[in-house]
Amino acid sequence: MEDPGQLKRAVIDATAGAIAGGISRTVTSPLDVIKIRFQVQLEPTTSWALVRRNLSGQSKYTGMLQATKDIFREEGLPGFWRGNVPALLMVMPYTAIQFTVSHKLKTFASGSSKTEDHINLSPYLAYVGGALGGCAATIGSYPFDLLRTILASQGEPKVYPTMRSAFLDIIRTRGIRGLYAGLSPTLVEIVPYAGLQFGTYDTFKRWTMAWNRYQSSKTNSVGTDDGLTSFQLFLCGLASGTCAKLVCHPLDVVKKRFQIEGLQRHPRYGARVEPRAYRNMFDALQRIMKSEGWAGLYKGIVPSTVKAAPAGAVTFVAYEFASDWLESRWT
Image 1 (cartoon, rainbow, N blue to C red):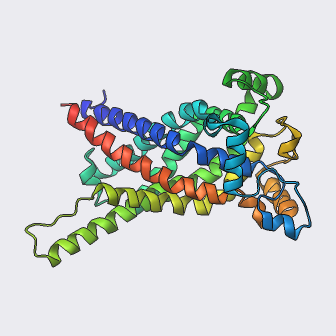
Image 2 (cartoon, rainbow, N blue to C red):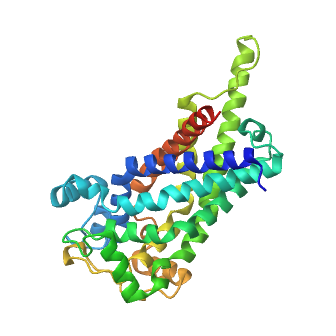
Image 3 (cartoon, helix red, strand yellow):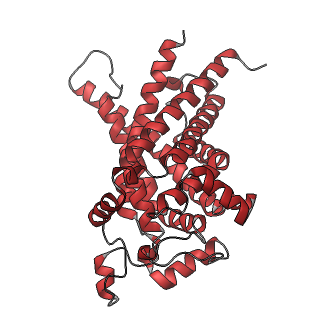
């Protein structure tokens, strides 16, 4: 039978992770919607690219500010939270599983479930724990990720008025396998992404704690104050989210293309991704490179990076606070 202390810790990690994921996703939803619109647009997404290709007015979105104005004008404020319900249904179990698996691995390695006992573990363990947690979480929550992408990318007029209508149409046209379209590039992406996010966060925390000890010793303070302030936690999360997103963005573009294959949209949004446009992940990378250039693999990188930084910061800070609060209440 499982140790009650370990069960308590698992519940705290899962609950804190779900809370953190829900807050982060809701706060950063507008940037996520803009990012998805860029990623699924086959035409160039910058004015400079249009000029170089001698094109005129063939792209729906050509910049972050322009995209923000267009979405607000055509869809109103709710347009920036389109697909947020399936996004929450995805991200809350995702972060709950991710933090639980990561903490469980550290507990196994250190022999203790206390967070303060994990700081002396090898920093590589944080990378491994994040990657394993990311894989487990992705498989468990992927259909909601697919539905979120479809609802966020469809624009006006809506193809699917509700999440239920999108779900039923996917089952009808693609079958159960359709709910996992794009899973392969997602898993290939999530290993380095989650590993980097958790690993760099853990590394930045260590560096910051060492800096605090150094500053404490310089001022001849009694004892060593290596605790982290809320702002320092925020900066660590900011840096980890940015690093992970910059490295893994091309695979996220490929994933989005698989997810919206065959989706009918109004012609003003440009060409659509035809059914079975890509044979596999490598074929998608090659075709995007050939038809859209390197820039095609980094469509949406600006809103993605702008989103990843606060998303990572909010997630980790919310997790730390929720975890501490739950632990203090569970006495």
